[in-house]
Length: 197
Image 1 (cartoon, rainbow, N blue to C red):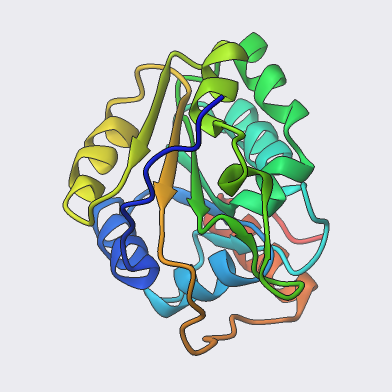
Image 2 (cartoon, rainbow, N blue to C red):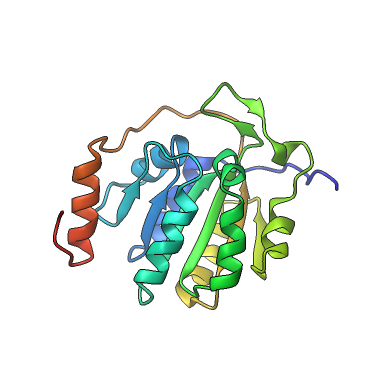
């Protein structure tokens, strides 16, 4: 397996462009930098930020997509977290929710634990893994301009989709979303017209 060419984009610019283009989508964020990036793009009740549960963003997004089939659901997570929950891609391939898109911000490093190189910079091809799990619409993204194409794919809801976004291995200033889990959960439930619990 060969390592993909690492032409990369600025993470904050890409996430801001994508979030702007999908104002009605429900967004689940992986822990750490993806949460900071989505929050920096503009806090909203449709964002569900995860502060822990490494590997949990994609399964949570899958459950949400199955429970809310009329809504577009987007998971924005990192390569380290995707690798931690890689089996969830197989479940997506089996369940095939047309309204789910997984966006992996891949800097080739474990950004939350000291920038050690991750498997994706050592030869693991996440697009090939997603396709092997049955997600036919799996693509690699390496320009900010492709955010608009990805937004159109999300809105079309033609089947589960996967995008590996090659980002620069840097750490922009942290923009911290709300850390109160009950507040985030209840605000998100209210957005869906559900009562808090």
